[in-house]
Length: 206
Image (cartoon, rainbow, N blue to C red; front, side, top):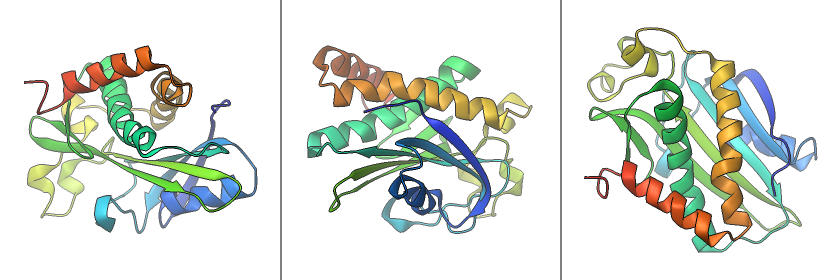
C-alpha cells in the first residue's frame, strides 16, 4: 500500500483532514503527508475544535488505496497512529508519553497530541486520512486560557524548539514501520505493535 510518502508544506488551511483529499483525488500522490503552519478550523474527535496556531505540527497522512479495509483493520490504524506518535516522541526526543484512549497523547497528565482517523469509501479508490495534531513549538502560554492548565508542548518540556521539517520526516519514516503490518496481514508484527501500544497505554501500561 505504501509508496514513498511525499511531504507537502502549506501555510494555511481550514483543516488538513479536508485539504489532503484534493491531492489524493487528483492522483498527485498515493501517499502524502500534508503539513500546515496554521489550521483555521482544525477539528478533533466528534468535530471538536482543535486550536492550531503557528508552531504546532498540524498534519494529515493521506493514503489512497483500492483495498477495502475491515473494521478491525481501521481500528488498528487508530491504535498504531497513537503508537507511531509515541514512538517518534519517546525514541527521538527521549520523552515518556502515555496514550489515553481513544485519541490523546499525554505527558505528565497534560495533553501533548491528538489523532483523528477518517476512512472515505464510495469511489473506485478509498482514502485513509490519518490526522495528527502535536503541540510542538506552540508554548502553552500562548494557548487559550481554558486549555492552558491541561495542555503542554514539546518546546515547553525540552525548553527549546524542535525542527518541524525533521519531525515530519520522522513521521514518514515511522509510518512504514507501524502501518505496513496492517495491510500486509503480518499477524506477528501486528501483535508486537499491539504489545507496544499496551506498554504506553494509561490503562494497560500501569
